[in-house]
Image 1 (spheres, rainbow, N blue to C red):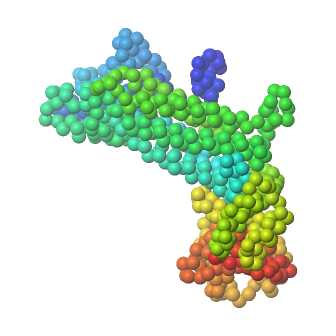
Image 2 (image 1 turned 45 degrees about the vertical axis):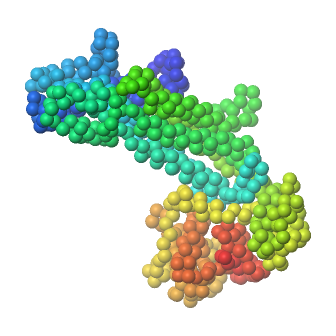
Length: 595
């Protein structure tokens, strides 16, 4: 569209946001509808010609079929304008298409005498219902789903490096049991993917059965033809599902199902927009500035979360239209009224606002970066969240009314480490439980968040058990780089006879081995190493999970000797510290076991 046309547009979809919707416009516009009507009329003519029971319309040659299909395949805006010119006389949009197609057939040698088989036995709704179904199919499959998938892929890419970054939860807006940033993003990924699949698999139905759905005229003309089979074959040839039971209109129930699925996807995205907006407001996320952008016309320092706000607003508009479409289209008086006709023309509006919202959210994602300092400070100021762990362990030990005791001690209070440790001395705890609880920090109290996140995100890392005799050299290179070169562990301590008997595991990304771990027949996990450039993407957790699963399949209880600075990593996987710290190779270690 010209600049003048976009400036004068009534709808922002054809004005301000037009450049975001170029791929959608040819599919859901008036041009797209007319083109689909022409396609259905042409394909019905070809289908009838291939039906033996229609003896008066002889089979078409391959050249004839190619000529006919070129009518809709090469359909251009000038052709749509020609249809509209015919409509100015007929005052009927589908009849105008019929006349347009007939005119095109007259130029194909030998077909002029058969033009009355164009629109044969059809009501306008035979053409319209299939045209709108084709419109929905192309708009969904070629534009909407790719936009959804791109957003989800980018959300996954943002989430993967953050699966192990602890974060305070905020149920009811208050400090609650910690999670990880990646897990919270993974929750959204799982929700969006589920609704995306509903959108993708919603069947699109069509009918080709005449004025009131009973093949009345068809049977009058060719009583021996199997019209239900002919109709089914035609609808399915268009890539649609056949609905054998209709009035004059296909009742649109399937269209409502699709719109409801899209509404749910949009609602999940809107929920995400608001959450991210809130996390930005409390400093958990920062937004990278874009040179030249203005955040506020009066406050120069501001970088506003405008992309998520834009997405939220457009999602509201999209769902308002979709809700009306879904509720209205399934209702029609008796065998037919025309109230659905004008409403169907707003399909493009609903899809357009959805696409603008998705594109805005994608732009917002591209600016996000985690503010680790703010997240860590929030966790360190919220030791009261460990009250859940304390009272649960007291329950296990059979202490009297542990919940009530913790409620009295912590409700409405903000605890720091010192107060938390003092609290542990006052409670009815065993020495072992008190020592274990003293080791827990808010940052380490994230449960299975990392494991759950990796599963939801579909990690791009593959972990497999490998043979030391064939893969040992590659695994040794990783351990050499990590333990000997990076950590300064003496080579004579790193290499031992256990490698020959141990079970070894390798993590691959894109065919490259980037991490390793081993399992001894005693159940001890060790030599866990990931190359520095690949850390922070959940690879260590993927290796650990694979080793633990392998051990459990063989009935082994597992334990390990963790370097002190990664104890929280193993605690997040469910391992518990046992005994005092000790030194090995000059590095503090902690024995840990998986209950």
